[in-house]
Length: 137
Image 1 (cartoon, rainbow, N blue to C red):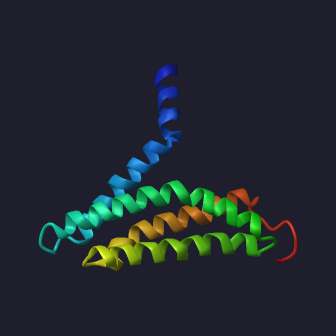
Image 2 (image 1 turned 90 degrees about the horizontal axis):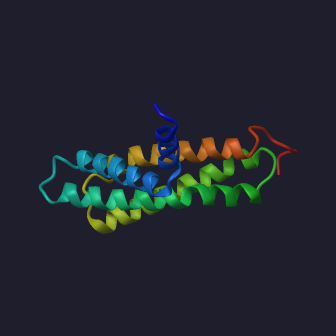
């Protein structure tokens, strides 16, 4: 692989647009699959709703975790930001899917919530230095 190609791949990997599009396609496709047993257009609407939600959550999750991590200290800093982000994401996902008429809400949000919660926990761990810096706050 040439130097130019590696540079382009690195730029794509760091692009917010690419991350949002990937989240939209991956999680939107999952939602279509999770709702496939229901009559059309329900699976497609569920996929569109989940795709948009995943794209938006992808944009905001990083900054939410960073903001929350600054508000906590000690051991609380390691678990509170990802837990709060997970609960917030779950609330948004359930509410909007309920409003949009998604038939299989729990199946639809299971994978996106697992992915976003894992990301939030890992990212928080990394920005927190992987350990507590002071006693539990």
